[in-house]
Image (tube, rainbow, N blue to C red; front, top):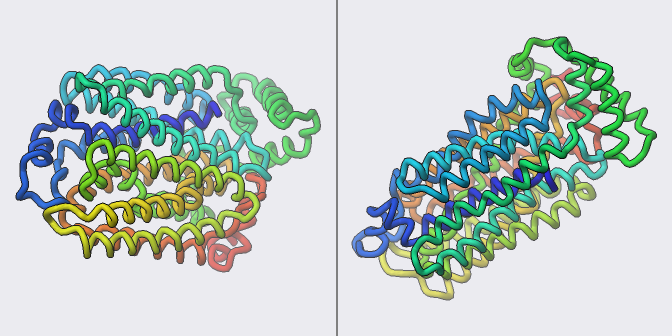
Length: 482
């Protein structure tokens, strides 16, 4: 729960920005031109009302900072352990929430977002690794999906808080929304101080030539493993971890990035790029960031828009919870494929309804607006038990120890690059493509479902230190791994 608190903060920061950017006092104070378009300009297309460079840079500045931070996080996670990275994340979240809540101009507002981005970069790099390494192999899927469940809970909480603060009479409700992130940030910071380090990390660091007392680190690793497994009989697992660590060639600091480029790690490198890329082009973040704006485009009012965002958030969280219960039973591939088909059908249906019923001007009939809302919920459920949690789970379990920190950094970086690109371009794309935007993302969902079917081996129940076998036995990757 402590490590997954990083997920709560990530979800909260995504959800909160979508909500406050549809609040009128907030737009009036920081983005007056968008406010005028929304309230007074009847000539502007429904699809173009919120198209503002400044508004998208507020949302997406978080991801630029996260991208830069995730590379620093890689070195810290590898050299000093998973725990310090989680602690840095907590402190950055604390600072960012305070600055955002107190913002008096656009510069303070964006500085707050940048600090939150540093927190997100460190948390997303270290928390999924921490969860994968601490969990027993047979329940690893459920534990790791706890990270995505936390992202969902964070987003849902943000949406609920937005519904409440939007009603505050003085027009300062958005400050409460931005500053409330302080609460989970304190829990994460205190939690990080109390958490034990992972045995994998302690063993890896005991091999480091700079380690002052390797035996002490090994002893700590043994004690940690005994305490998290609840038994003193951990000899077999400990030996596996030590063996996995001893097969790592002695490398200079930072060179795990050059290692992952070797031919034998080609499948892991491709997955660390493809999976987060595909996770973003499902179009989910469009729903997450801009759900309230999207529902306003459909002609729902301010409160109705925020409430419908709460609904989609609740559906996403519930479906991720279901994924936690079934991922270790049915495996990763089945969920990826089933969820992909579900999302594809919904995207095409939403696009068709908006294409035929929502023109550039005027609204859409209430019946169709609610039908789109239902379809968005089914789509969010499909994401919630497939690409949502598995997009973080699979990359955190496929890397050998020597490339794990670098691999996870690449995953996080690719995730941020495409989140940033989509956050930065979505409002302009909505303006150009109009309803076609849903066909655009639907096409990508089809591509990724075929990719998983052909190229992703099953990782269910396989210990991390034996994960290299799945690539050797694969019809395609076996040619590279040998």
